[in-house]
Length: 532
Image (cartoon, rainbow, N blue to C red; front, side):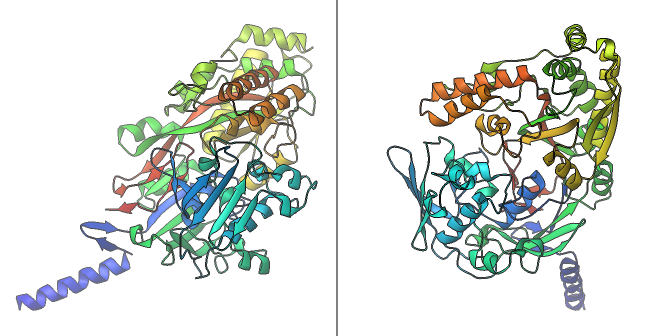
């Protein structure tokens, strides 16, 4: 009788595990991870996507030539090894043998060549095309000045990829871990241009594969049995939820509907920190506001600078945000290397603008013809829908009214509409941000070049552009870094943006989630993660 009861009990437990989507790895129980990444991405085609949410989903579905480890260092991924020419201009990558797409097709060097060249094409109109301008003739091809065959990437057989650069790039091995450098299945993409919009046709080469996509709700993925390192993938699957409301995210987390979530409400951070529900990660990101410098009144740099000086960032960070952020008095955050080993770019550069310098702000606004804010029309501050963005915008609104006499009206838009508005420059003053794609100041400085698709302010200064070109075209690290310091100083003086604060990523995460790798760029790798 005891044996029969034991059999029944074991049977019940096995059924419960099956229903719960659980499996066992030795003494480790692994369940599907439920992860709220934010708003639904604008695209999950890695050549087109730009959002952090997209990047974190794609990091599970794709794998580039390299990936980043827990120390933010590039390590072999789809490429098992590479060779670099003595002049630093030519890289030859060797793909692992037997790589497959999630549909069983072989992953070839031609898939990488195809993906990079189409991302550069004018037809694709990728916001991130400039990330590939490091390739020889990459920028010229994007501008229609040379043929595709002249771009510096070429498949050599099935497993060799030869890459030629315009100039040596010290951070190139880190750069190619970004989603813009992921491969795309050429056979599939050339036969179905909408392959990345539906789970039925979606194909990747990463540790997980997509099984369903309910738009405006969630994406579900499962372990990819075609992945070359599938034996090290512990999670049976991941559910990525799309939730824009910070308060809804928190409610779902505290109701055990989520295991992990980005962007908890800033108003709840002190309690969440005390209860151990939030983990703070270092982040290479900056929150800022962009002015539309093409329209009055923000075509006047004195008005822009007055707005910037009138804001008390320290008060916002310590009293409103309370999440470990640091005030930003420039654009490049802490954590970026300078010239000498161990030196920090931000520490060496210092601050380029004062915080809460109300007297100077009032003086500049008067000089611009708006004493005490008189004569200045109501200004519209635009932000993408989010409780956190709203709280911050309300603080800025109050400060500008109190310190400058300026009336600011707040308006919000759903994320996709918001970014379309920024792209069309149909705004006055808008919330903006950037999280670095690699650990170098250039990932921030190139944003504000004339014509950069992520230059939402429309800022253009030939002197600034010249400094960025100097930084790009020299192999002398001291000259390169000095040019970027000079460019940053000029940018802040011209004030097309208001730097607000440097990020610290506050992530809701249960204590049962283990072995997540999160880089300083905010990319999350879940290949080795599990839930105990």
